[in-house]
Image 1 (cartoon, rainbow, N blue to C red):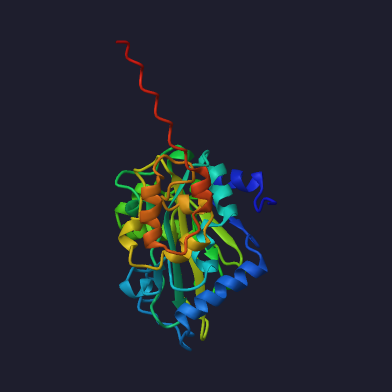
Image 2 (cartoon, one colour):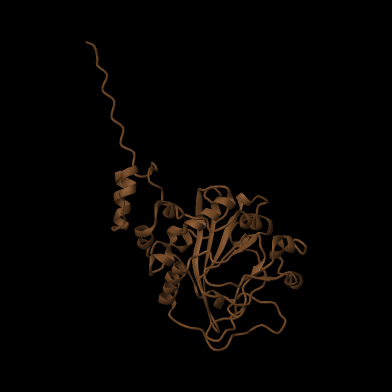
Length: 314
């Protein structure tokens, strides 16, 4: 598969903590996922934006901003359900984190509609709900967060705004997100940039990066994105979604359509792992009757032959 990113873009992510890659997804991939968004949400936004803050005041978090968030798996096609496990996303994360042993610890859709909420947020860093400690100095010990754009996002469609790492460090470190200091918001705003882009764009950032949601003002507007985060499998200090808690969701879609490397992102052991025996295969098949076990059965280690009993001399 031809790479969808360059080494320069990896270097930008390492330096700035942020990189934007236009046309990361093909038009065909965008169309398939967009169709799923329309199936799941099936609506348009209002004619007028909802604005609750006073003029000049920084944005605020409110529950209405998050009503369009759903974690995969979702009852729609594999296009949306496996978009976050796209091989090209895996490849970027492997390069950025220095390992191909990856874990997908957040994968959700986020649909926003004009008038549903005042989506304007304060600048913040995501590490506070991804780890109980702090962002590491080492890239490999952090994570990679993606925002996948599946609709055209102009300034009127609520793009993410962000501040690069070098610029934010002129103001404060990521620990400043703990203070809630309004003065920091104004200082960061001086360096604010936009992640607006066309459908198919990939926005990549780290958990130490200051960013914020902005309001939708386009009449009848919507914003379809997915938020996807990867970490090294061994780095259990970072986490967000515990997948087994979501067991009532339609996991059959992912099991029936995902490749072994994609299923492994959710914690499913790969073919050849000693976990797999005739018993564990049968029990897992009972949960997902249409899951094709061929590759797991082919790779399953054959039971060792029992040693011959030693001959006892009379």
